[in-house]
Amino acid sequence: MRQIVLDTETTGLEVGKGHRIIEIGAIELLERRISPRPPFWKYINPQRAIDFGAQNVHGISDEDLIDKPTFREIVRDFLDFIEGAELIIHNAAFDVAFLDAELALAGAEFGRIADHATVLDTLTLAREKYPGQKNSLDALCKRLNVDNSHRDLHGALLDAQLLADVYLAMTGGQGDLAFAAEVAETRRAAQILVRPLLRVRLADAEEIALHELRLAKLDDASKGRCLWRLALHDAAAADAAAHVVPAGA
Image (cartoon, rainbow, N blue to C red):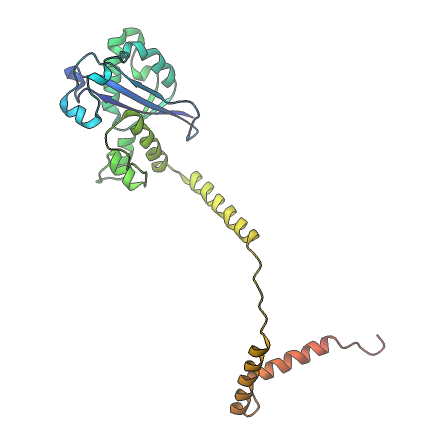
């Protein structure tokens, strides 16, 4: 199954007020593994000013985008990248609304996102899985032990990378658990096979002498019925009997 984990950054929060996309980051997953295909990552000249509040979130300024292509100039490459895939987006309604608006401005022939790909919203998925809890990307990273310590500002590619890890962790099924258990069992078996032999250390003369002295004291205390000596006597007798050759043999 081909999936694309996608995120965008914009000039502001409301597409209805003419805000535009300024960055797209997208990563391809094949059969739940990040593919070797390079990510799709573009900065885009929005041809309008960036809101101050938005700039504080992603750190991208108007000056950063002066020499970048417009969405119209990268639209075909973008659609080629996502064509026929399932898009994995956190709070998908926001990104899809902006993408649809950009496609409409680029030309009617480009249609809408729904004409090119299906969409899975990880925010909806997280709310179903963790009802009543915070389900922002940062909260999910913390809950699922995904390292986001390097995320000082939002960035489309960085957030897509984090979301890919979160999605895979959040949707790990029984098959994944079974595979993990199988790997763990194999590792345990390998550890058993390569475990070094136990070292056997024999008592030296001094230790044997001290042991005999201890047994003598036990003999005195038990009037000759020291259990250790009786056990040794019985073991020696059994060993001798095992080595007796029957007459005529």
